[in-house]
Picture 1 (cartoon, rainbow, N blue to C red):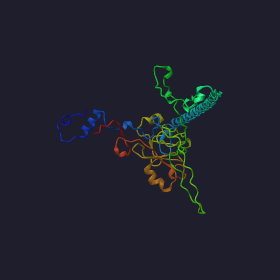
Picture 2: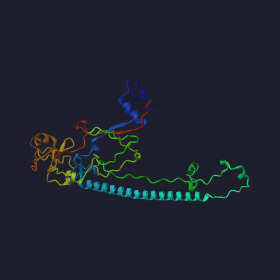
Picture 3: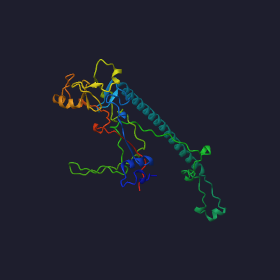
Picture 4: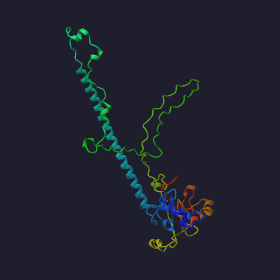
Length: 348
């Protein structure tokens, strides 16, 4: 129930934004939006998995920072899960093959049994000329039909399940597993009813006969196909161990140990300009050296010669990885700091 407008702002003529948010929160309907504060955002040098400052950081080609131990453990876990899914799929596939063989064997036995029963029902008896049937002649209606060998009646299958009788209690079948596939090698599915390619003419002018229409394939399963490729937990793109680049931060004070750096708000500086690094400073990682520099330094100094200032190696655009940083408490940081919660909506 929505609150009365007159009780909120002394019968004002305008339904204010504050009233709308208050009524939305009290009613339980409508999408709620809330802006995150600085405490809900991780620092730029923290791991995306453990959310703790990195001791041995590595970065992906998309700029997501991870602790080496955490991301390697994640990749190993994903590979084990893919191997387990493949093993379960192969096991279920073998079981289904055995079931198909048993069904085919049972069908052939039923066919043979029906043929033998039909043959045994055919009996040749001599006609007695002194009986009434022989004198009057037998009509086709008087012939007794033999035993039926056809499929069983459909009425027998129309038996409702019963939860009180053990023999009629329904049983849940095993879930059909899908084979894990690579995202680039997903099988193409034929659309039912789609005809083949149109006839094409050769160089001599003769027209080829149109190919046979494509047969409809089995409809797609409702379960999504599992991927055999390890993906990045943040971007969702394929990730390999060779794609990880070591990152070397330049500490503000080299005499302070790692425990002392954690307690400081400013821990690292740019490797070239010695500017302080924070969530408000866009940063980039140079792939050859792993040095972290500011984007301002990249645009004004490094892109002129495209040379790594630490190692002297030539750089390409792929060697400059923009680091994905957390946001600040201000909207000017360019990072979306808004959380949404979808709830039912009342519409007229």
